[in-house]
Length: 112
Image (cartoon, rainbow, N blue to C red; front, side, top):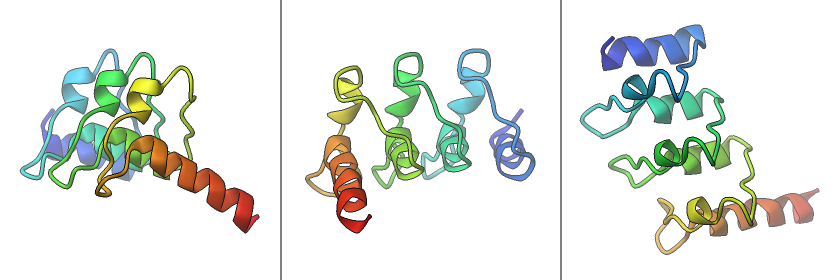
């Protein structure tokens, strides 16, 4: 399966690839280094922060990790268990994934 076919399967048919069995497909990327895993996270798949740590660290040319996409889609990382993921730099200059998660939590608390 090539990159385009894999992305079409994820976005159009909502059929997700298994991070263990289909890892080589999830690692396929385009010229902007956007992997199939980035698209799968965008489509709502939640990668396991313990088992899929390598996938969550994948970064595209814009500096966005799969973890950041997953965070923006509503997944909250555990402060104790996921320290390595939370310490990753985000695509926002000078901010980590932890900083972004904290902002999201504060916005929810303040905004209701």
